[in-house]
Image 1 (cartoon, rainbow, N blue to C red):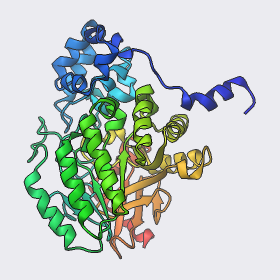
Image 2: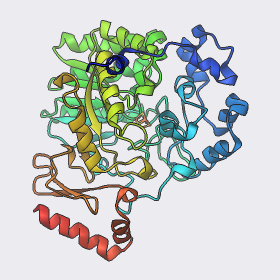
Image 3: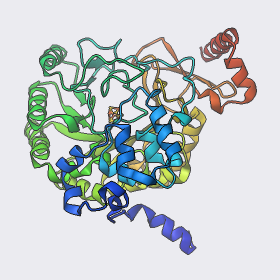
Length: 443
Ligand code: SF4
C-alpha cells in the first residue's frame, strides 16, 4: 500500500461521523445535540407511521418516493419503527439506493416474489421449541425469546412471523414481553443439565425494562449448569443514545454482568451492525462505555444485497467494528423468509466475500460467514456444503451433530440465476427434479 489514496482508505475505518446530521431533516433542524442524545427523546420521536415520514421530511421527500413507501406497507410483513438516529442517517437525496432506508423503510418497487421454497419459520424454530419462547436445537445452547418488540423493525427480520405486531399482510399472536411464561422457561432449563448457554433475543433486549433484565439475568445465572448468557440487541447499532443516557437500563446490564462474574459465568452482548453507514461517533462513545464496564460485545451481520454484499463495504464494516472493540462474529446468509427475496444473495457471493475479508485484519476480528440451514440444521460455514448446483442455485448440506442423517437445502435467489435457470424454476416438475438430483449427488 504505497499511494496516498490507499493510505487514506486504510484508515477510513477510524473516521466516525460526528456532525449534527439530524439538523438536515427539516422537522428536526432545531433539535439540539443534548435533546438528540437523550434516549427518551429518541423513543418519543421514533417513526411509527408512513405519514410521519412525510411530515418530518416535508418537501425533501418526492411524492413518488412517498407513494413507494406507502405501497411498501401493503407488502412487508414488518411494521415501521425507526429511531431518529437511523432515520437522520439515511441519504434523503437518494433514498432508493440508501442501505439504511432499504433495511428499515421498505419501498414497494424493491420487492420481488418470494422464492417457491421460502417458509415463514424458515429455521424451524417453532418445531424445536419444547416450551413457548424457547428453541432448543443444539445440545448445550438454547434461544430464549422473552419479548417480541424492538427499538427498530428491520425489513429483513428472520422472525417477521412474530416480531413487531400485526401488519396488512400478517396477523401476529403476541406483542411485547409475556412475563407470565418466563418461569416455564427457567423450569425447563433447570430440568436439562446439558444446557450451558442461553441467548436472550426476541425481539430485542433493549426493550426489556431494567427490572426484567435483572429478573431474567438472575434467574438464569442461578441455574447451576448455565455458564453463559448473551443479550442480543441491535440497540448499539441503531440507538446508541440508550447506552449513553438510560442509566437505569445500563446499570441493570452491568448488574447481571457482575452477578455472573461472581459465579464465574459470562454475560456478554451480541449486537447487529450490518453496514458501515450505521457507525458514527455515537457508536464509538456507546462502545467505549460498554468496554470500560468490561462487557464483551460481538457482532452478527446479515448479508444483504445492495447493503453490504460488496468487498470494500464488508472489509470496512469488519475493520470498523473491530476498531470499536466489537468482535465480528458471524455474517449470515439471508434466511429464506417472506418479503426478503430482494435482500438475498447467492451462496457463491457469501463464499467469495468470506475469502476476500479473511486476511484483511487479525483472525479473531474476522467474521465467520455462515448459512443457518432452512429446516433447523443450524449454522454451517458457507463453504461446508456437500453439493452446490450453482447453475440452478441449489446447495445441499449436512448437520451431523444437530440432526444426524438429515440433508438440508438452501436456495439462491431466483432473480440472480440465468434466464434459462429462472425458466426451469417456473416449472414445478422440473424444479422438483432439480432438487432431487442435487440431493442425490450430495448423498
Ligand atoms: S432487531 Fe432483530 S428481532 Fe428486531 S426486527 Fe431487527 S432483526 Fe428482527
